[in-house]
Image 1 (cartoon, helix red, strand yellow):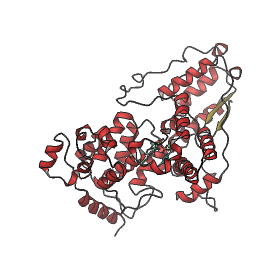
Image 2: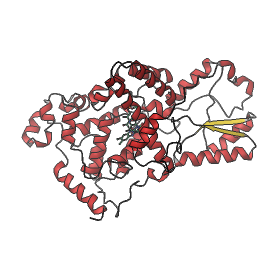
Image 3: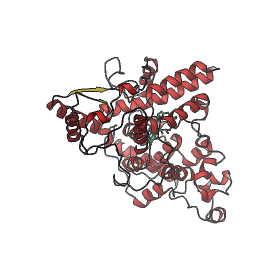
Image 4: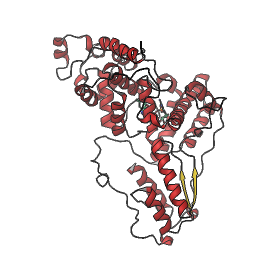
Length: 425
Ligand SMILES: Cc1cc2nc3c(=O)[nH]c(=O)nc-3n(C[C@H](O)[C@H](O)[C@H](O)COP(=O)(O)OP(=O)(O)OC[C@H]3O[C@@H](n4cnc5c(N)ncnc54)[C@H](O)[C@@H]3O)c2cc1C
């Protein structure tokens, strides 16, 4: 966020203006600022989580009390909550129909950034000293320097990512998006989250890519990518209409799900020391990069909720802390999908086997070895059967790498029983 703001400030300065930075309760700070600079009109883009909507309504009210004009726009997604509904006007709880309507709906074109002569020169505003254009540091905000090595956050960097993705990887996305070693996805999630690129611009680039596709398979691949953008909007709609999903299950079970409480297992999962190589690789990627490949997010989330039988809220909290692209709607949607508690989620009895997932999606163990260095010299075949090896074999091959902390087959049965009890069976 700070890097994104810093690059935005730089852009404004390059255009004879500036970004004013202020901290505090927006209900007080924004009306005070509007008053100090004699603002006629305050404009913002809409945000859809429950907390954000409460905040915006309060700010709107405070500005109204000062007789300042208010206006808000939609910018975060192509189609706002309420604009794609069932024929009865209800929000969709299943993605397929939503996705089809989303695809067919006309999209707005991106807007140009304003010219320098449309912007305000801060010199003309006599801004009180209380407001400045200095961004806070991480320490000012109470954070340590990030351990993670984050990708650069700026519009230039985002445009480069988009351009290079649309030149090549978008055409093999459908085939390769599930293979984490390939890194063939767009890596635009943090940009979309922090606004270093707009969704209209991303969508327009995919339309241009579809026009330049040479085969049906390439065109379908572009559509598959667009469909992920639609998932993002689907989850935003779900959150808008069900703000409680942040803490509550979307899906109601007859009885409460009896998640286990096993702090050592939770710690092993967070540290990437479960003895399930694909899970550990993902959890280490998360801490090292503030990012994790989508297929692996699904695997580690399934592992936490179905193998360790721990509450999805534990995983969601850890992801929220670690992910540079943390987005309430998508993160929550992903977790509740994996935990079989969400809308249109994974059926409770379909439980990923972490070993076969690793074998299928990382057959050469390239992704695993990138993050789990203890396995650097172990053959893929042994990595993918780590849970079946004897203690002596494991000791000989990679003495520093942990033994599996649970037995997947046993836990699979136990998890199904846990869900059946919740269903009242
Ligand atoms: C447990 C779990 C937690 C997740 N948490 C987040 C999160 O906090 N923030 C986040 O943006 N995504 C989240 N996702 C969705 C997905 O994993 C990431 O969007 C994706 O990995 C980001 O990489 P990318 O930009 O290269 O994706 P690409 O495959 O290039 O997709 C393009 C864009 O589409 C959107 N998208 C893709 N897949 C999904 C999806 N399944 N659901 C919603 N939107 C999607 C993202 O905005 C993404 O940037 C989560 C998924 C799971 C299973």
